Length: 310
Image (cartoon, rainbow, N blue to C red):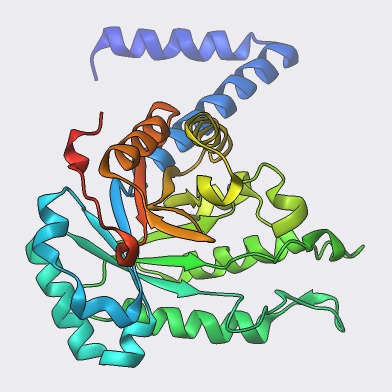
């Protein structure tokens, strides 16, 4: 080590020895803030994203024209996990390989707390998390994640049906803690090379009604997907943009992909025009979203080139 370097080190040591407690405390605070900022940046930069996706129900897997998806710029498909029950793992894996050959990543779409009836993430008798259901569902997810070619897992119905506020106990077991705990457990079990995305309700009071703490969930998920199905809320462009902005500001640890409804509403399933869909997608991106996903392939009649989005 050169003499000049030794002198510099000696001067730094002398400076540190001459610091008082207040100055040391300030330095420690600065270092802690720098560490948090570095952690924040690393977490964001290493998170996967969904730029242009579409949902496909399991029973329609073999009906999908992958060439059409590729042609119009779809890069991610959320395939409902029921496809595995219907067609078997081998056929699903072969289909995924075909999608991969067209540069389309396939995520298996899993329903978590709804299966013909709602499942409470909390055991109201023991006032603890519903670990038996958690473990059962996580084992299912782990098995799905090992199917060759799978690029991600999407968690759906990770919520209450609107009554989350009814479940809060003095021991810290609350609806939002239960939902977050489940997502944490799933994240811990998945390989790092798999994308974890979660669908959430597009409302600002998600904690109160659905148990969805977006800020907390963003730490564990790569992508949070608010289902901004404007027709169901009797809303249009400004609401989609505002929803996009709100979730981008709230889900600070993850990417955000806005779910776009491709038909008028659940009570009127008339497909939207390609121009309307493009406008809906564009305002979502203008609001800050990192991507858009179309719901669903079965009702997608009027395509537009998603590569043309800015």
